[in-house]
Length: 257
Length: 75
Image (cartoon, each protein chain N blue to C red):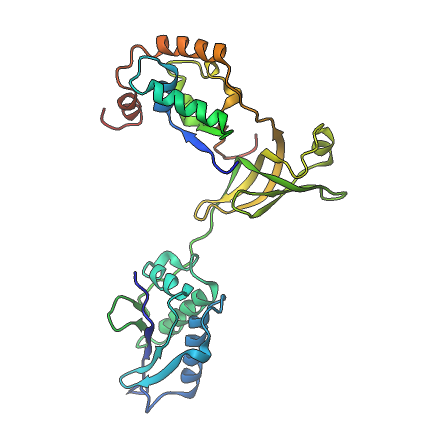
């Protein structure tokens, strides 16, 4: 989605038989809405400088037309994600809080509706009493993994660990025991290693937490011609009854061969 | 060391069976990955599929890594 640089935030409601608009709006609603719009625009990253954003109050419902928004902002990503009601986990927490507040207010005041739209209607976020924006409980599963990287630090007295610089530049702090480190005969400091770890992995995001070192793996693969020829000799005999490997695998997995 | 590869069953079959049309290609990749020290992984599922026709221990396992799966409890 191409980002736009203009958004219209509006809240509509009927209070004491009168529609909310610029000429008739409860002070607390005006204050809360202005605060919510500011918080939604900035998010946690605060990558939008509100000083450079212009706001005008529109007729109709109470509406704030916001212009001058930068294209490079997490705001657009989050608005795209908010097309799904299950998205509150994946959007900026401050924006998720605003949506939750709006939804709670709308459920208490059935006429209340919050909208965020752009002129081209590519963005259209509606929050009212019938919407069901929610957070999905995060699922963490225990996994074992092999991770590559360079050891930046290892050791420690009470909480021994290994600091592993991954290929993407991030540093993974892996808990371990003095026994495992003591048993290593090689000095791995500043060297590339392959670690066998257990950890918890977020099923949605793939984020790893609580990694624990199981072992330093020896990983020095080498080509051995005699070993290779023996493998091919045995493999050629073993697979002689299979005509097409890909079709055989496909059929095994429940597809049509 | 900046990359790793995940091997599928059909690659392993092509690698070990010299009658496969892609045998030489598979061997070339295998040699290249060994030369470049690129870690080669296969999943437990791939190992199980391969083992239907041939013991997984026929492979030079020191050159491969089996990618462990999820655990539902303790070991």
